[in-house]
Image (cartoon, rainbow over all chains, first blue to last red; front, side, top):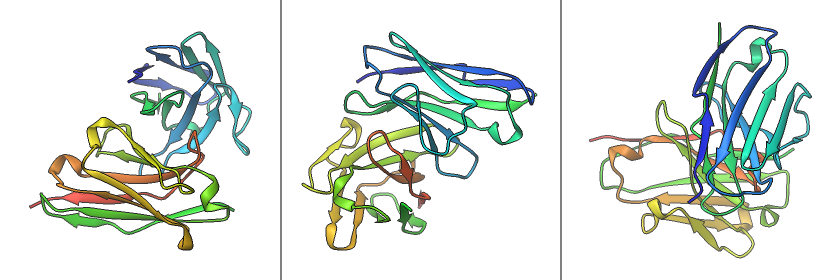
Length: 107
Length: 115
């Protein structure tokens, strides 16, 4: 199975900050990487697919990138509604696997 | 718009089975995979498996092989996930999600396993 190592597991940031979350795959997954946002008690929301493509309706303050097996999610200028937990997922091969999550908290 | 509406919360005893449904609307049900993902209390997301609603073919993670059954009823655009031989470790919210990678998600079904 492909392991997805996500870091950090949590971070504290202020409104207006720029935040970067990293996900590393244990083997090549090409660009088959998705990012999700989850708020407490809610279902995940799909943000990004194919490493850097935003789903319809997702604001452009979210961006994704890839460098080999390393992937990043960047949130520019944090807003209160962005405080949540973020997960990456590889969909290059079955079983699909998620990163452990990054909780973005208010400083 | 796409909607995935799941069945309500369940409380089961250890050793029992649970069957969760996911009714789809707003798109052609047979055109997109349906995935099942679970989340234990305070934990991360765990992919369980998926069904191809067109063929009925399934994949699941080795952890659940022999214990999970994914089916669908195309006449009512509904996918089902049945998990047997429940233990307390199966207490979780279970989600269905459409497409690969998942795009649209159901609201979740809380399954509590308790004696």
